[in-house]
Image (cartoon, rainbow, N blue to C red; front, side):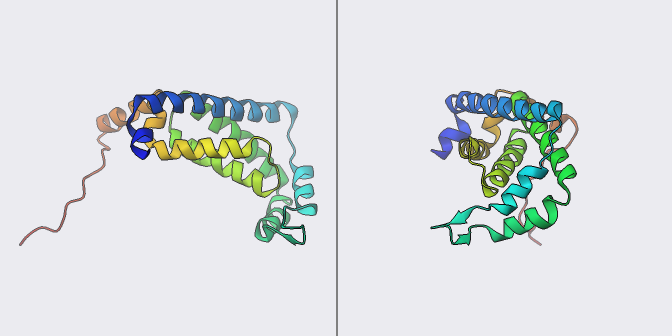
Length: 170
């Protein structure tokens, strides 16, 4: 299965479909937030007031995350809003053009996890699974995109990774 995801052209085409879906979803979400004047303050306060509960609702499932929201995110809601808006736009654009695909898939997955930990389910689980698959596919995930040219550019710049050599015999 891993070989299929990392090596085959069929997987590259499937990754293209996943990238386009994720990229469009992130890009339109971020642009919508920018044009509408996104302020996450109310959402963050609600996530603190009504956190995700475990089991029968007796204890918080993620008390550490609720504390992070309460003491870091809520007081800095303006900065958090800026990071979310532009993070969504950058992740979306990167995935759409297939440049630094695994990097943008990672950060998209991190945003999905942040939303899930705050209690927003929506399409986040599906997006997270697709992001993880892109991460597993590594270079094949951006094969049909600008990632295809990154190794050639690195080579021209003289930035090819050096092979690890074992200890030299005396």
